[in-house]
Amino acid sequence: MNVRILVGIDGSQRFAPVVDAAAKLATDEHGELIIVYAVDWRPIAEEAEAAGGPITGTPIDPDALIQGLEAEGRTFLAQAAQRATHDGVAATHELYTGNPVDVLLTVARDERCASIVVGEGHVARELLHRASIPVHVVAH
Image (cartoon, rainbow, N blue to C red; front, side, top):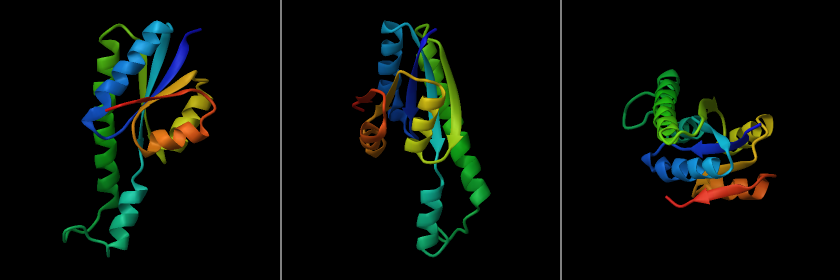
């Protein structure tokens, strides 16, 4: 059975070093990657609501907000998977909804991942405290 390595990417183009590091780890360990993007729209909606509703005078359409975030996530996932498989690394990818830390911990447990690879930031810091498997933090 292949070693499963979970890769968490965020909504930025800075995921390339994270995917590259994970792909190298997968190659070294004869593993496969599970690339995850978590859509967490709640903080955006809560921030907008706290500000009085509209953002820059435009009413908030929660469905449009969620659809936009999911579309962006699917785009990033496809780019990340293409980057990972370019060097012959097996990779799957999946979009989830929820808190990124909770999503990554749940997927890691359910998929029996050997490690998690993420970029720097608050998600990495929380994973380092909560994960029961190794967490590799990659500088952006």
